[in-house]
Amino acid sequence: MLRQLSGYLRQRRRDDPTLHVVTDPPDDEEALPEPAPQVLAAEHIESRGRLRAIDLRRPGPLETGFAYFADGVQRSRVLYYERGVPVLFGYVAAVVRERRERHMHTWGKPLADQALYFPYCHMDPVPLRAYDIPTYDTAPEHEPALHPRLLFQLAQDRIGRRRGALESQLVEHWSAQREKTGWLLVDGSLTVSSATTGDAMVGVVKSHTTQYFSGADQDVVFTLEPGHRTSVFRPLSRSYTPVFSWYVRLRANTRRELTYGLVRVEVPAEERLLGHIDELSCWLLAEIRPPALPDPRWDRLLYPVWDCEQYLKALAPSRQLIEGALALI
Image 1 (cartoon, rainbow, N blue to C red):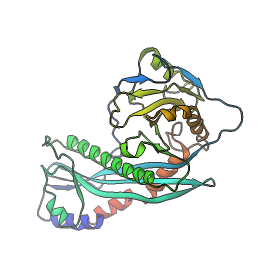
Image 2 (image 1 turned 180 degrees about the vertical axis):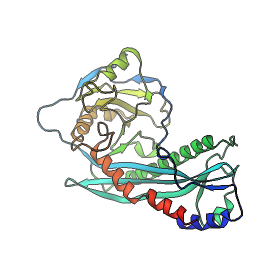
Image 3 (image 1 turned 45 degrees about the vertical axis):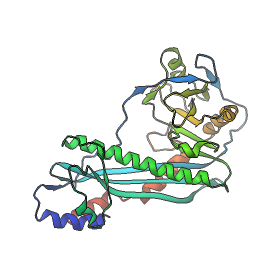
Image 4 (image 1 turned 180 degrees about the horizontal axis):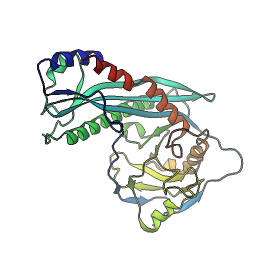
């Protein structure tokens, strides 16, 4: 796609002085936007009217039943502006990796997609399509103001949704395969409604921008010791994909941030799974070694998930490749 885009931009720049190519983006451009913090409601499932801490520590070595790991990545950056409209290059990919005999292998076929993202109401996609360059509309339902930072954020959001769609598609494909043993660990929230029911699937959420408790209940979460979990609750905002959820402290947060080493776990909201909460939590504790260093999120990032990310990043077009294509203009 980058080769076709280079030819398209070379032709356009001869006649259009409003087209501004960006070969040196700011260092923070590829950083993913953080969602706004929010507090949502939850219903206590495992304990009556309050959250409590539960000790998971057991004698003997920890074992794990996770055999599959799913994750996705996204990369994006502004390639050029046309009359003030930022045109973003977006690369998204998803993979399921399988652990066999302590070695990681790619399960099935990874999914990947690269395209340009911009609002069609402010810029016509037809000339790009003539060069076989795929595009996505970042504002299909309304006409946003012509503000570069606003349009940049809309494009980032659209790229994130595209990544989520690939992850969901791949998890659904895994769910449809019956020739598999072991549980699937999904990096992030379980958002695939049709694939979660009846499957051996767990979601692990590393971000804590969404909070479900306050007061004494939230104190239980923040003071959770390593090797402990909270009692189970049900987020009431998840009517489309209902889940049971709980927190697990993977590593001690002594003199660290409150959420250091803390993850939130999700399973499909099925009564049969309530008897497996301790077992699943212990499996997570078994996955913290080896540590996912040097990743700055290593306190919450499990090594097999880190492996998925490294695999997908190796397939992604590098910054040097993108800048090389733009340098030909």
